[in-house]
Length: 310
Image 1 (cartoon, helix red, strand yellow):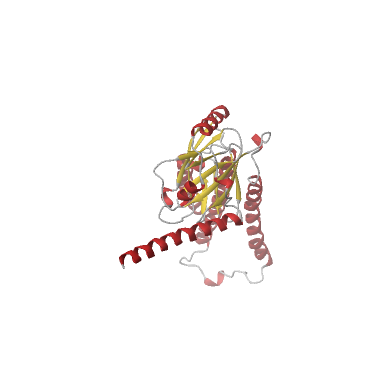
Image 2 (image 1 turned 90 degrees about the horizontal axis):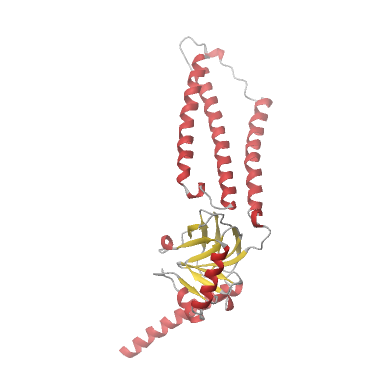
């Protein structure tokens, strides 16, 4: 038994080293240093799952080590002494059925509870209505429409601190996924349908956002910045944008929707929602019509060049 204890301690120490190293490095990971309640809930769930699964790994390896040492073949052992009673052993069969059920249950309950909690605004700002922002992905840009404020930005956005933000996600073409690691997990943007993502910033700062779903050659550059600021600073930015930014025309919007990466961010004192909501079937039809119009123009120009050449 002394040998077993000695080996068990060594295995526990060896298995603990990766966990210690991983958790010590988590402070450098954005998702492990959240700046809002959504990210905080997800971080707690990650930590809980890591510790729970590490506990399972330790138990399995300790038992494995015990079995290897206790039942190993060695000189002088009579093979007749080893007579395991495994077949039809109801006790063992019950144990290896119940334990996995308990493991799955202990992981599922907090996960499901967290998922349901994240489908509604954060409780810390429940007394105030969420700020609604339509986040529309397009190859390879982000359009952020503020319907209540009547403004729209491209590849950046401002949000007030300590207020829940209701992102209404959709796409003008390929499937994307909006992700702001410091504030919470990602959710998909799809053409012709709308998904909702609630996030909130509890600290001032500029946070990185990006598309986390690969959608072609411009995927790596489909990023944006989130400026989290006080309510007074946010209101001041809204007023300034409303008075100084140009109106967004349908022609300008269609040009911006063309695949490509912008050199700089843009802002407008009106939104594309006056023509189309890409989260509806009409939005999907709008995208199809736009692509066919572009194809028709190219075909017309090509035929015109051929005719002039003749």
